[in-house]
Image (tube, rainbow, N blue to C red; front, side, top):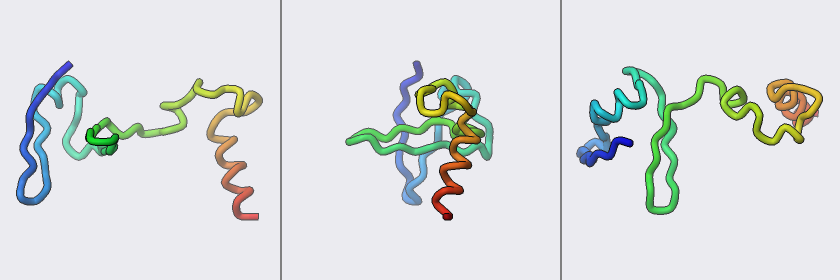
Length: 80
């Protein structure tokens, strides 16, 4: 685990220290999710595919189909 102290710039930016970038294998231009959790701020690498990242969770929700198909059917139903 890498712990670092960073400073918020006058442009409201922070620099992610090299040790943290290397530990998470972050690349320039890569997107991060910024999550506000109470009085904490959490930054995590943005998954390329959220469904693939969550695959296996709550299998009872879509036992007969994959997650993408389920979500597409649900979203199509909103348009009806």
